[in-house]
Image (cartoon, rainbow, N blue to C red; front, side, top):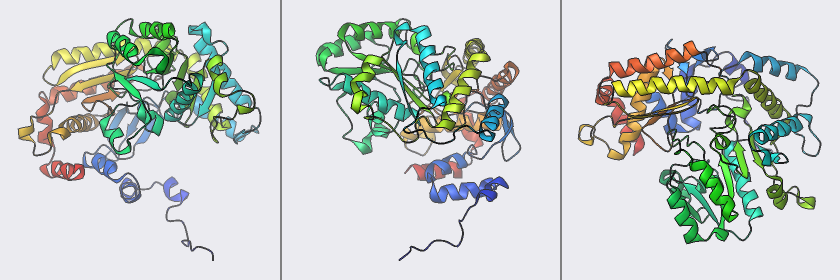
Length: 476
């Protein structure tokens, strides 16, 4: 018997193209999506849909003009950047393959493989014959890296990671993301994993002696920690990690998903820090802000332990390396290269960090610290109020701090983002193409928020008690 189906689909493409009201979209998301997350954003007025005005600015449903800095580093060019859109229209209107080349050679895939290896080898010549595996996200790229490392060192069992790390939420990647909130419901996870203080070479040396170097599969490291709140390691740390690993024959996996491909003012933050990793994971900017693309670059000798001969399909996925994704990735690399966005990010990053340091000096009661690396910026805010002033679990105060700051920024025209592993750090990840005058406007608006709310607790005064009560109920 044939299963019944609705007479028509409840929502059709023309409903969205015609401009679905934001309230209706919120209603549907609450009904069928990540309900509580959407409700929290809606409570604080920061979750509505945005209408792009330029690649770097948008208008919210109340008519506010916002500078866009909340893409989690996944939009290297901003919204609908014309050089990428023109290319995409040409591609879609042409006769090139649009499907998924599973058992065929792909010119698009070959081009991206070649360019990624060339870019890495330009900094670290040892990668001249490296290989590339494609996927659809950063987490998938990390999963591939885990398998490659395991296959290359089958007698080793332990991975080493660092406090504050974020590598994704799929099972293996989550095992390397030392967050109690994210890991707790899913234990036992992949193991063993030894978590060490980030930037502490003595702790690394001691751990390797305790575990035994022959039992360590790989050291997994972000050259700059993103979700921890833009944490830059001490000078020389990355180089020393590489030398220690090489001395013991341990692999190094550099997670460049957020820091790579120009975001930090370098093609690869790891190599800029003197690290020559065995495996590099990439994602966010590779898709140009349009399509999901992940990539895992790996030394040939490591790759061949897993993918060789009749076993060359040990790791694969249906959509990884699809023609559309590869075409966008190729054009994205060209734009970053040809428009000098790596150098621009370095210069704009220096300017931005100088602005943030001046704000911290002027508002020490509001800002605990500022961080920056290229076009990755972070402000760690002080707790908005002592627990006795807020009738909710003290553990909610860090997220309340960020929500209130994000709300104030939004109301003054800046769209920023959370840090998942450091709840009091609000991040700004503007497009690499953002003109200096727009970037300056963004920092002017951040400064205006700080001047308006001279002390953190003052932001509480702008939020109705009902909203705080609703937040507490959602949290419970």
